[in-house]
Image (cartoon, rainbow over all chains, first blue to last red):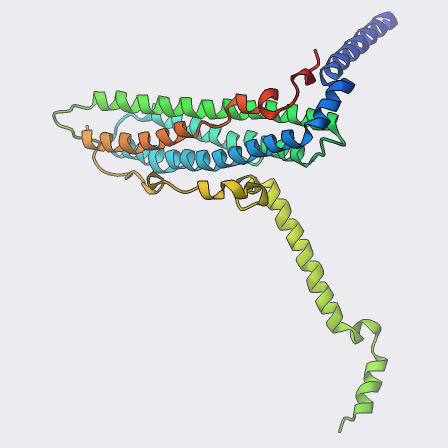
Length: 181
Length: 126
């Protein structure tokens, strides 16, 4: 029994050490690379600052449009379907999914605030004095930015689905009467 | 009749904190306001409002570009018949918003590559 436990512990330890070594390797910078970051510190910070500004503007614009689509278009349309005794279950489900994804995008613990905090941290790090920490934070911000892009792509996909459902619903309603069922 | 000496004697007999009540009031008000400001700033940062606040110094350059479009104020009526006109009106509003979103072209991954940021490409260690 003791042998099995020891064998298990040794295996676990080997796995942990290997994992840590692989992670550490990807973040190690050579002296030349550190020197390059220090040399280009000002221009890197400037580029990063521009990305920060553009992303903040995009977030404000997108947030406003998503909010309008959800509250000023989807919700009233779903209500109208219901009042006209039409089957709007699919539309309602898409709206629920859209709102959930929107919250995932903008919520306090959502993907965008998380990304913005990381990018702000990167901008606050002095890349001349702390090049390694700066590079790690930029790498982390890049990963989080990809998560934001995935979230917006999902929102766009849900908007397209909703639009397609509206087309399908319109096609089912007799054009001649143009009235409710 | 109360004389000035009586008042002085009374004040001498008061405990120290009562003699400085006015300063305690001012100091207390300052401390309470500092605590409230700290709480407000913590809420501002944790709620996500800070990320949307284009009046922050870091976003001064893009403030003017965040104007509202005419489509933002249009709300589709939640009641009424669902005829062809109703659908077409809805699609017109909806497409206007979708077009604005498409034009925004947000979070393009190429904006954060090493090359775009000016980080030497050799920085990514194999």
